[in-house]
Image (cartoon, rainbow, N blue to C red; front, side):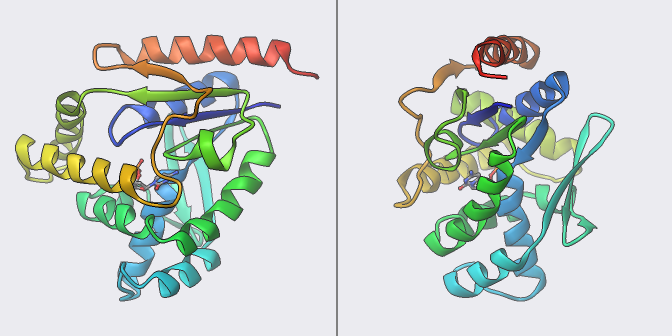
Length: 225
Ligand code: DC
């Protein structure tokens, strides 16, 4: 069973596409960004400073992550409790970007992510799936979109959830996260040499899903049974 790796910057549409591709193929879906968000949330709840690399890493290696479908929605469980909504705030997004810079935290999550990838029949999305977590993935996609379009999507999501924020503030926060994610020393966000690059600024998610499902079916047809 193959693994599909989908990487790209925040709000590029990775999650929506990865989830739908997984559903269409009957694959499991692992949202690695949700794992970093879960670590940031758990640290905040325990009063651990996001900057304290070793304390956050100890916490990360002890956390149990589970993913489950609820219709079309993916639910994320942390040590058995549902954190689907709690991890989606902008504050926890910023925290995820901070904790994900620590090599010790990445090592702790990498171990769990590699086990999930090894199971196969999996769609994984994040920043370093095609480069570090699953370098042998049969299908690798790098999803991109302009900062303006990503900010527009993210702003609409936050407003729909009742967060009061401006488009300019969202764009600034996204640009700052892009900078942290691409400039960090360990596993920075970058396109794997063999990843397909898709700029989806003016593509509908359904169009992107069709493309990825097509590539996946070709790869499944070509892989040994
Ligand atoms: O995709 P997201 O917005 O849920 O990710 C939250 C943060 O986690 C993001 O700022 C970078 C980090 N991340 C990472 O470093 N590596 C991954 N594979 C996934 C996410």
